[in-house]
Amino acid sequence: QKFDVCILGATGLVGKTIMEILEERDFPINKLYPLASARSAGEIIEFNGENIEVIDADTFDFSLAQIGFFSAGGSTSAKFAPIAGEAGCVVIDNTSEFRYEDDIPLVVPEVNPSALADYRNRNIIANPNCSTIQMMVALKPIQDAVGIDRINVCTYQSVSGGGKSAMDELAKQTADLLSGKPVETKNFSRQIAFNVIPQIDVFLDNGYTKEEMKMVWETNKILGDNSIRVNPTAVRVPVFFGHAEALHIETKSPISAEEAKELLKQAPGVVVCENDEDFPTQISDASGKDDTYVGRIREDISHNNGLNMWIVADNVRKGAATNSVQIAELLIKEHL
Ligand code: A2P
Image 1: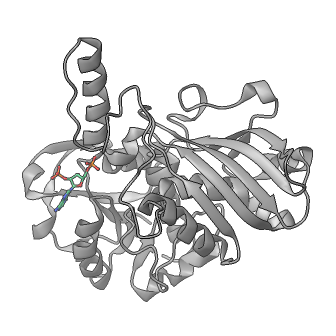
Image 2 (image 1 turned 90 degrees about the vertical axis):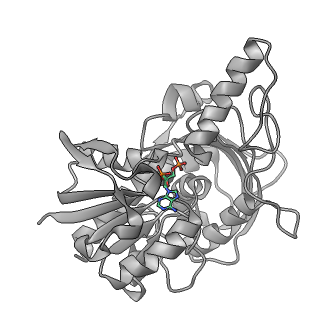
């Protein structure tokens, strides 16, 4: 069986990567509809060796597609996802628009596949935040084995999380600075080249940023455990692809670094970098891959039930596009 699929945001970074991954994984597609705004309607996109014209989403009849991948920003999803869902197109949404609604499943296929069945409520499935996804993939085996009480996490997030224009900004600022020109800032609240910025998304009333609170809300929802306390600091770094995270967790009962390594070696979607000096980085390991790389696994010298690790994954792939395609694969296998 093959499916008609639409991609909303087909001209964007995540939309393009979704198309690459659909090709790579030989996803069973009958017809592909690339959708964007009126700005890029008529542009030609190549998919599986075919040239396809980009369609203005405002003019598209969503009943033509059975599956829709949406990554064109929150307000665009707010507008089109309910229309598509009503028309019988199951939406896999990459924005945060629907993630916190009780009747919308929030799914990482390796972690909570059974949540997917609730897609029938509204024909909408939410893809979690990029930083949450990789953290869930690495922590699910630990949660299952010993239970997690608390997570302290600092992120080191690449600019591709902000889309194409954020990447262009890092490139241009870097070139400008190296040739003695003044820098212009647009996507970030500070210069991003040769700098790190402890702000991703807007500040909320509690002093955390929205990106940080996404990690709190989504961890509780995905693991189905509101008792897990999460304390995040999300930081943008001048890296193009891949997010790293320093995780410091407190478990309900103790677990040794060796036990954690053994558990993680069995976990789907995880690559364990066992020796301390083999720690993963964005450039040398994670960028362009679909797995979450876990290194620096060690016991916390300051806490009896503490465990530390350093995790890295490609935010555009596993953090967005790959996870969405895996959700679609699961949907097809179990429900369509
Ligand atoms: P467009 O090319 O028409 O602007 P990125 O995250 O890389 O910036 O990409 C954003 C994606 O979302 C692009 O494909 C963009 O299409 C699409 N998009 C943005 N706003 C809208 C909208 N109002 N309607 C449809 N697509 C939109």
